[in-house]
Length: 477
Image (cartoon, rainbow, N blue to C red; front, side):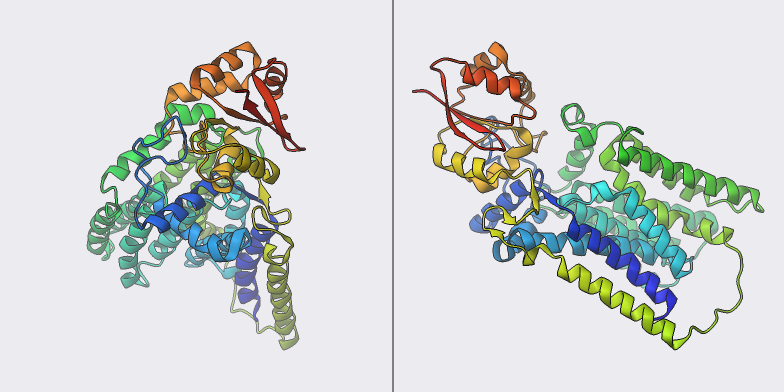
């Protein structure tokens, strides 16, 4: 185990360990597991909304259908602990692939550090949801393109990756975009592989349309990014603030990238190529546009900057042979780190079938879910906090909720009504009556005024269940 191999191992195992230790949110995950279960049961892609009473039966552009299938296939036999393992594998693969791209120009130690820096910047985006598949595939495409002059045949894997990507997450358009940037770069530099990339680009665009929804997914992907309701209601789709932890890391990394480019310009004009600079600027704009977009900068910038970093490094002589004792010590460290990743897996923790291993899930109030499943049925209209709705769709199947994580599916009028209800007061009670709500789940931390309104509503609403997470109210008949 040489020092170079040690760094390569660290760049994979440390992110895997961090992903394993972290808890797992159900906000975007649980409904996708349930959707996958429904699709496996019916052997058909869901195309209509099955979850909400505000959009039930309406067309649903379920572009992420493949992610739901994968999640259901893992969660069914292995539970939530199995999904935690999947998250660790995807995170490790994404960081490892970034390092693979960067090592095209950098020594392994610097490639690993650059990849780990990207991991830290993008860590908030690495929850288990469909986007994580997109991040891993994005890193794979960049790694292949980085080595295109040494491994030219590998570029034909890109259309296949884009085909898979287009059925997993709406970020698939970044695959053809990366190929286009590489193509322009080769044309400017007069490299021989430009003709091949023209065909790969065309094949990637065609492959992206091989989905149950055809070319319409391009409109869906662009529509999500520009949807005003999503920007208004979902924090991570709002502009990236330098005052948040993610925003501070992002803007600091952008400043670091600018400093590297400036240093390269001062050293004999060793600037990155024009297409590379445009690519970096585009990724930075995406990251600034929305906090959710920081991931693409975090995993794209290290590969794009690797050649610039390499040009700034001092030249060194031939590497010295490392003592056998040091190599053995390196191997022991890697073994210990690998065993730590295995030892802390949530699979070994106790728990129950509903909420999984102890301490793993967030946004998953188990008691409320059990109460809701016993108090409500398919004919009810349940108003629940949006962050919990995805969990209820899985844990209390068949009970229709008002709104959930799919902001683009629920009508804008429903979101207006939901906001009014969440604010509490007489307007909330009047809105509940107008929409025909029969069950209300209250989060006391964010909806205390709503809880007070329901408790003091006289004979209209009855407290049916309460625990430390929240309360369930039912309409008096």
